[in-house]
Image (tube, rainbow, N blue to C red; front, side, top):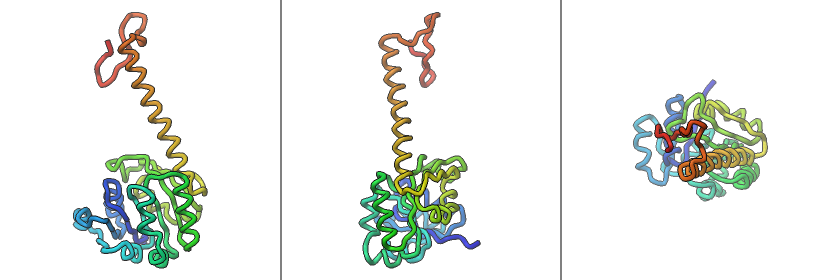
Length: 216
């Protein structure tokens, strides 16, 4: 089966790695960034630099957006000119945003005959492309099935969270709240233990260890 042609919009720390990972998976990748110089290494690796967002979109089957936020993507894509060339294509949004951002994006894509998948990456750039790398995604099941192979090239542990476009962002917020809440609680407890000696066992030795140093 012929692989889909991919456009990657945004070449920040994560966007550049997404493009590089897709190139390694033998996809034809067209890239666009406001600062073209950031594409130099990708061009050397086989990517094609587009001079305009419209050019990148027009030459691709699937458009992946990874920018600072959804608003940046909306300013680039949600125009009549871009909507015409995106008709029938699929947009995968991997920027950071809220469930409402995702649903608003989906409403625009549906209005213009564009497929839509919203995603949340639960990894750092250095972890991309691994079988265990987790990515939450949500959107129409047919759009997920169309994009599944591409997304799994970016992170093998893809979790489809449902057809509500905002589901991936909702799960992402919940996961991060639990993780950072637990981390904050741990460090607060550690601080208390250092000051008040709350974490001492019956022999008087502290059993809480951090970075190979025993708390005294």
